[in-house]
Amino acid sequence: MESTLRVPTRKREHMGNAIRIRKYTLNSLATLTVYIDKCITDLNYLQDNGIEIDEMYYDLIYDFNLLLSDNLEVRNYKEYKQIKNYVKRADIVLESAFQDKDPGPIISSFDKLKRNLIKLNVLKKTN
Image 1 (cartoon, rainbow, N blue to C red):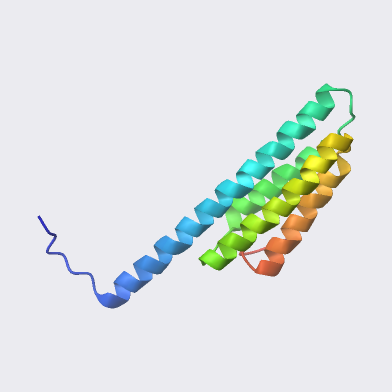
Image 2 (cartoon, rainbow, N blue to C red; image 1 turned 120 degrees about the horizontal axis):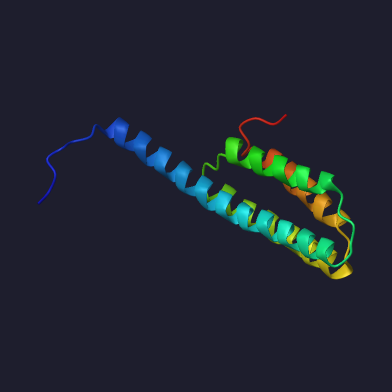
């Protein structure tokens, strides 16, 4: 049975745009969250195996996660694909840092990722 509800064209377009933005934002947030989780897991592993991990690293990751949760807005597929590419590059740095047992590059990869997201203009506000 078809719905008899007619949504005005302008409202349909607005709804479509809002849904696309939400979809790309949530997909990007999921990709970024997997990366953040991997960073935390790797830092924990290094710490459990005798590498000293400064608490500041976890604070930076936590702040980055909050920034993404509160401010990420991905408007189109092109931005989404670019974010995936940024995360792939950051993941390469993460793998290298993990194998070298050096937590420093993990945080620098976060900083680079954050700067790339700011440059891409997908963070609504950055402090």
